[in-house]
Length: 103
Image (cartoon, rainbow, N blue to C red; front, side, top):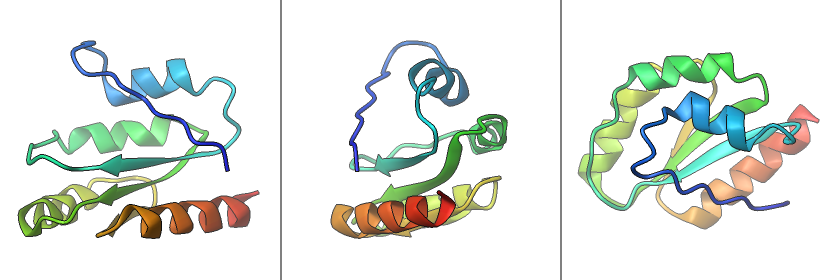
């Protein structure tokens, strides 16, 4: 599995725009978000995920109870499959298995 890291802090671009720019050559992708710090994402951004054909699923990795609750709330807005994990290795296994099912 190829790993891609996207750093877009301070760009002013939304998630959908960034993924459309960066994922133009990606056939099928799963966005893995490692939520280290506590912050709020406007849940409407997840509805934009439906506009990205090659974005097949999303998952969040967090070891914080507060971030887990936030992710559960944000999950309700996702138009794509959305999972939450406590450890990055669990998320990578899920993402890899999910891509094999998709392809």
